[in-house]
Image 1 (cartoon, one colour):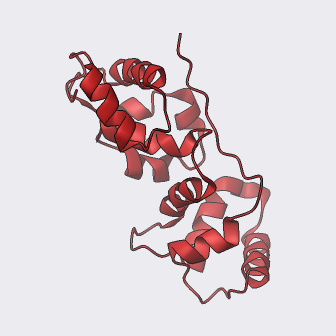
Image 2 (cartoon, helix red, strand yellow):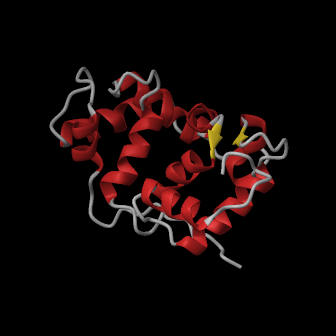
Amino acid sequence: MGNASSMLTQYDIEEVQEHCHYLFSQQEIVALYNRFCQLDRSAKGFISSEEFLSIPEFSLNPLSQRLLKMVDGLNFKEFVAFLSAFSPLATVPQKIELIFKVYDVDGKGRVTFKDLMEVLGDLTGSFMSEEQREKVLSRVLEEAGYSRDSPLLLEDFMKVLCKPGMTMEVEVPVD
């Protein structure tokens, strides 16, 4: 399964399905494997940052540099686990956990006001001034009962973002 030139066995498919908490069907896992093999042009069994950047939607994403840190060198099983947060079957907490990892700039398990400012800056670019970003973030944190001086742990981040109706889904074409 690690080598892109090998074929998936039924056992591999079931193992990946279990690893991603059954958020993808067996048919979707096969489709994802085919896409993984297309991306793994060097057939090393993992996808490099350069290969990820060959995906137009990925390279155009304002957070692509942050996401690259999370996805560089993923093997197939890790690739599917990463994508599972985008499944329509993923829970809101599973989706928020991925977002938390994007915002956790230094990977220390907490999100600071500075981290929030950096990511919001990446997302808004020149459309919002630093002062506007600061104002918006301060207000959002205040409304959730936090201050700009309180680093957010995953549980805190969930409280701030866990709103009904949150969607973050991607369809996996299976043809």
